[in-house]
Image (cartoon, rainbow, N blue to C red; front, side, top):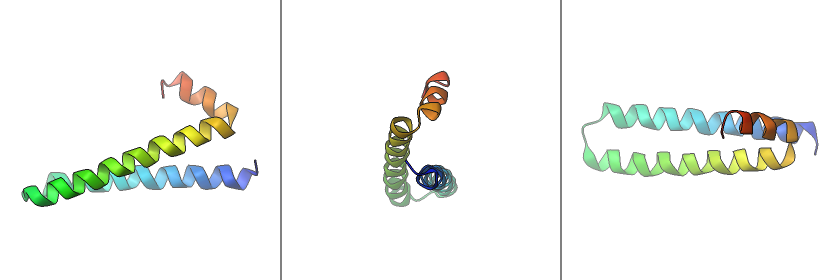
Length: 73
């Protein structure tokens, strides 16, 4: 596995986490229930992406897998 691929996956993970935080901020800031519903759905999709990236990182990088396990991820 080229190191660049692992770096890219980690950058993607960071991007997904930032997106989750941003969607949550916007959910918290609006009073419109329709907007909350749509943004919550999108946020939850991003959480699935985090899980998928975490899974592939664990598979491809055994050191990362050990760190995830240590943290209970």
